[in-house]
Length: 256
Image (tube, rainbow, N blue to C red; front, side, top):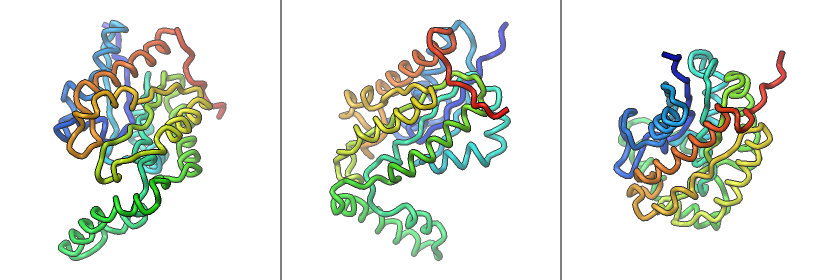
């Protein structure tokens, strides 16, 4: 029996949450598991998948993970056969309360004060989004590009010669973001352009999710099973083309 193909998904909560909320890693409807089964069917080979993900994972957190976490670098990414980069959605979401404020909240004591502050910030967020006309993003375009470049370069360097695909940012139907997302199309195109510079193709997730927007999680962000299925199948098609030689893989950085 041939050795299993090693697939790594670096993602956010969309990789482990559906319309019912967060799920166990083995939940069959999540897009990483749909992707795994589809690749096995297409390639006739077992696929071993590792998902590295956190709720609200931003490009800054992803950059820190792939440049500072030795386990992720050398036990997970090194020697991987295929990689999905599934971050960016929260970076491009409408900006309300600055992220630096959120970063301070976990350090507030006592816990009762911390909870009141957190509730207040959550209630204020959509008002701040409206006050800025939905123009601001959580991460500025320039900072996103700098960090996304870094993540892509690091992935290409660690998973040398692996097939890769970038999952484009989702949108929302969320009260928290004041119901609108006028900057989504521009952010999606910007993210895809940065990935293309690295030779990494993109799958635009919202095109597959929007037909199911009426069935999103009550938070207005996370996807029902049919959307996960559509995204997973689209990712599998892109990776299978690279793995079977129908499309080029991203080049290995010339670090040697």
